[in-house]
Amino acid sequence: MTNKQGITQLSVRDLTMVATMIAILIVLGLFPGIPLGIIPVPIVLQNIGVMIAGELLGPRNGSLAVWLFLVLVALGLPLLSGGRGGLATMIGPTGGYIVAWVLVPLLIGWGLKLTGRSGELYWLVELAIVWLFGVLFVDGLGAIWVSAQSNIALSASLTSSIAFIPGDTIKAIISVILVRRLRKSSSIF
Ligand code: BTN
Image 1 (spheres, rainbow, N blue to C red):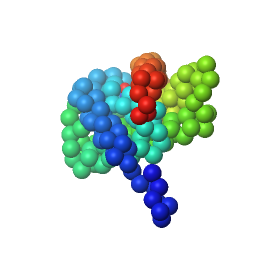
Image 2 (cartoon, rainbow, N blue to C red):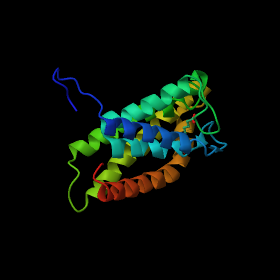
Image 3 (cartoon, helix red, strand yellow):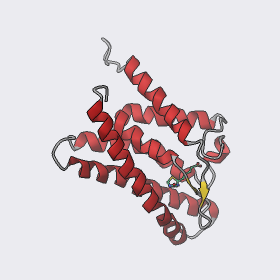
Image 4 (spheres, helix red, strand yellow):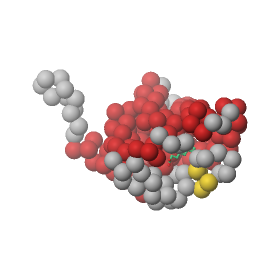
């Protein structure tokens, strides 16, 4: 919604969607992270929420939801998996993944807008966009950060991060199926 001064405002629908998305991210954080052992980063569920934010809410509202969620974490609320929170957690070994999360809704949202969202096989394009930005980009940037932060060789952290790819790919597939069903079943998306 744009007002007379040309300033884009959030509608009640936008605010409701952003608040709901934040609630979903919080609920996903209730699942404790599963340690992998080979890298100081757990398997979590919250990254599927970040993918869904971009797919369902688009670049602006999706980013707003993830930003606000991370502001709450930075303020110290224990909303990351395992009840973690605070600025120190965010700049720890998992900081690169969290920085990437901030950009995911923007990249997925823009990618879906640019590709027009139509055609019989569009679900494949959608999955490719979600996988590229929600999985490959996050796991890549996260591994680079782990290497810099934990004195682990870049090759070793990148190789370890490959362990996340199968699970994250399943999350990307689930998110695409879920969001496409929601779009079909409700006119609000
Ligand atoms: C945190 O809770 O501190 C952030 C955790 C980041 C975990 C990353 S997200 C991408 C990859 N897939 C996972 O399941 N875990 C890592």
